Length: 549
Ligand SMILES: NC(=O)C1=CN([C@@H]2O[C@H](COP(=O)(O)OP(=O)(O)OC[C@H]3O[C@@H](n4cnc5c(N)ncnc54)[C@H](O)[C@@H]3O)[C@@H](O)[C@H]2O)[C@@H](O)CC1
Ligand SMILES: Nc1ncnc2c1ncn2[C@@H]1O[C@H](COP(=O)(O)OP(=O)(O)O)[C@@H](O)[C@H]1O
Ligand SMILES: [K+]
Image 1: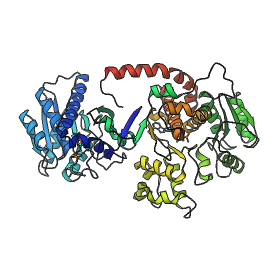
Image 2: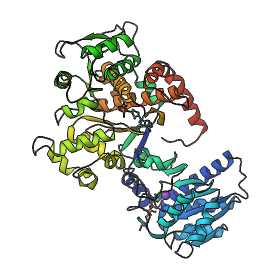
Image 3: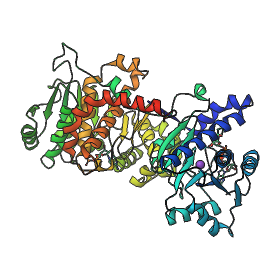
Image 4: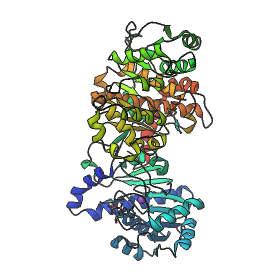
């Protein structure tokens, strides 16, 4: 499991060490880790350190200090180092160390901008150490002009390494203030920052490498977590010797319509591939016919939710506002008190306030519509106190007319806000999938590939979530043993499903396009390999001393 924290949490964890006079030691550990990472990158590209060139863009705070100390260490190893001071001044001790080591210093001004842009663009490695966790907003003035020009010129073949965070990315939320240099690698100190694991921040972070600096035991409950293969191995269900199909979990599927029978098929295929004991499908004859043809394993009927015995429900995929009978079944499923995954067409049809065992799975456009609907509900009907108290509510992005772009620019804020308002578990789909429980557990999974952005892919995900809800929903002990609050297991289940979906999509793609059905086809094999994957990743971790965790 990878744990990520807000900048504020990291600073609070540093506080006791700073009070004990260890500030310089923390900085040395951070800059040594940064220098080591740059050396590894150069060596991996077959470059000798002697004669390689590194340009550090250094702001005037401690982030710039880390960059300058790291550059001093590189200069001592024979690397040609140049520092561009973006704020006029710099961390005094770090600047002195850099100059002592033979680094060249330039001050960025309007008149040096052109020359320094060209010089930085020629470097083998550019270290972005302008702004770190102490930043307010994005790059400004000539620093912004330099970044803008470097982005425009494409930076040639330079490798961009972000010091702690890409400058201009909000460490807490992943929001970005353009221009931001996109890093190939972010070397982050103490622990991963939440913003690096949420879009759009993750777009600019590249690979993330954590350098421990000794604050670990002061860290609080993480702001965001990410499951890895070992967690999947530990948490995914396996049938016992005496299991039978009913004890393994039955999923009821209310999905598809006469217009979209395919969504019902794909949801059922996702569920079957994700280990459920049995799938019972309820829906119109056109969709039931398609399900029977593709999945003879599924038991189809046109009966009611109340008459159908299951452990969990999947509702909404492939349903529209005019599918009155299906929408009524969706509402009945939510009323039943059983775990429910509610997708697509069900989202606008459910009550405003739900419960944590209801997992909503919007993409950014659907989440924008959901927030807009909740906002327009008269006072008192929705959870209005949290609506106004939530920090996200203060963001103009979620004011009147919040749209898809606003959600995409503030994914973490949006998903947390929606979970708080609805009291449901909310999973926001995208390149990074975020899951928010209405309490304090938040997950980020990014196991997929962009080829997953294909029609029907979300229906398969809904099936996988449904299957895991049916199998794991009542297995409180499994989550407690793994240190997950049983009340928040719904978010963990959704994150596990997102991870499986991403891994299966990556396998199904094999570097090329995929069709949604293939995600289900390869899923059982991917599931089976999770154990070997977890062992391989553990071995890799041992050979890389400081992985992202
Ligand atoms: N506190 C510590 O002991 C440690 C801090 N570390 C480093 O210190 C960083 C945080 O350092 P700071 O708190 O000094 O803050 P930063 O270096 O992140 O930036 C703050 C500085 O930039 C200015 N500034 C803020 N927003 C700006 C903007 N939008 N445009 C231009 N200038 C702006 C501020 O006035 C301040 O001088 C971390 O990201 C990390 O790199 C590490 O060395 C580990 C130890
Ligand atoms: N760029 C991307 N990279 C990785 N995964 C993606 C990307 N875009 C979408 N996905 C994933 O693909 C699925 C798409 O779901 P959805 O938008 O509901 O599609 P549909 O409605 O066509 O089924 C989600 O699981 C989402 O996380
Ligand atoms: K930075």
